[in-house]
Length: 268
Image 1 (cartoon, helix red, strand yellow):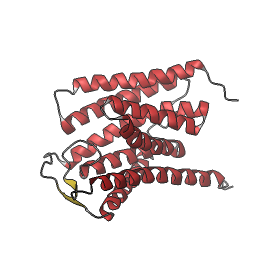
Image 2 (cartoon, one colour):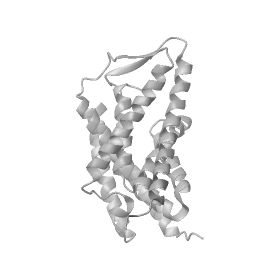
Image 3 (cartoon, rainbow, N blue to C red):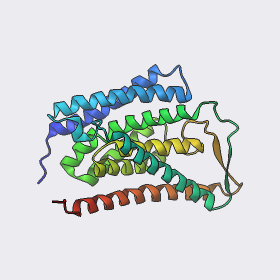
Image 4 (cartoon, helix red, strand yellow):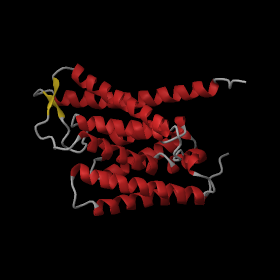
């Protein structure tokens, strides 16, 4: 029987609330800015804040940042790069699914903001870092230790969706989009025992989505999908189906890889 301490639940709730309040405060500070400038400031402030908050909470629990995958190590950069490469592959596969159905093309976006692509990359890395620390570090690890992997993933996914609803998304879009994505990022966090890979996947997906100006990301990417008249509904169904299949398929692959790793005998 799993022993659940009420104080542990209270700490997780306090962590979520503190991260949310931090986000509101950063948004207020960044209000005079717009677009990618605003995203960089919010992402930077909240990433640093969530990392510091994680440090305080793990010390409160008597452990360290390594226990929630938030400790920087010499391998963090390579692991982030691996996750980023995987995220770009997922974006590419999603684009191929849309283009492969026909009646959809990618064209130059005449409304593209004149921002260097590097600025967008920095913005999405910072935003993904903030969300990784706020959701798939301390809260996910603590919930998983008390209730198991899947209950923890589902709870974090629902809270992640709720934050997107607070940001203006509808519940269905938030759960099917952010919530499903959270399952993959959470699985990546648990199976790799760190945040570098999931942050890399998340940053690459959002950055790649911005490049093609889809998915509701910051407007102004260099390309945009153009769907022939009369095929909007079909494109929407294909886009959502491909997204869900890619997220859950990649999560399943990571779980399979993790089981293989655990089943492989250690060399003597």
